[in-house]
Length: 284
Image (cartoon, rainbow, N blue to C red; front, side):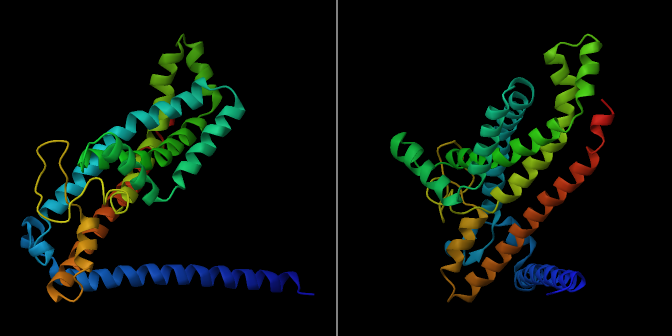
């Protein structure tokens, strides 16, 4: 029979091995992208439009299209996530219904991204006849971001001690004032953190928007909500299909590096926002 110390040693060794394997794979991927993508980066690459289906030129419109979609998606997400979290935390009293709501959000969070794309294609493009539109893509990305943002906000609100609410009522606040001045400031930390994490995921998605929101070439800045855009993920996908062209492959690595940098900036913003809002509940 294996002794307890031996079991601990084996378990420690396995966890350390798993950690180093995961870290090594991540570092190897990032170093490869930096090593291959850095030669393609230049001001001309960042601020000029693509040419020859991306084989030459830059990625200006791809960056603008990506930022446009995720910013509009974030605008859609904030009121929905905040309202859902407030309803569940302050108005929904049944523990069973709260559990159903949380399980529904977790289930929605686990749906494959291609499923959201097919849903958008069937509902908006085929049934409603919107055509390929960046606004439809933003709506689909917002739906994908809602579970993460809502759950993060809800957990922040639920972590607020009940005595805070009771003190608010003792001071003469009604329910709406307690929510406005006590609950929402507490949930703001989770809202911002969840939103930025959701954005970091959404900005790199290809499958949900490939057939409903983007065009692989020939588009610039949209002037209406029913026009397609070009995004970094779909641009990279298009360039990888030209892998026999060294110029296209070089631009693909450069676009991948820019996408990684955008994701890193958003993720870093999430940590910064969390640290800044960490003690917000103690200042209300």
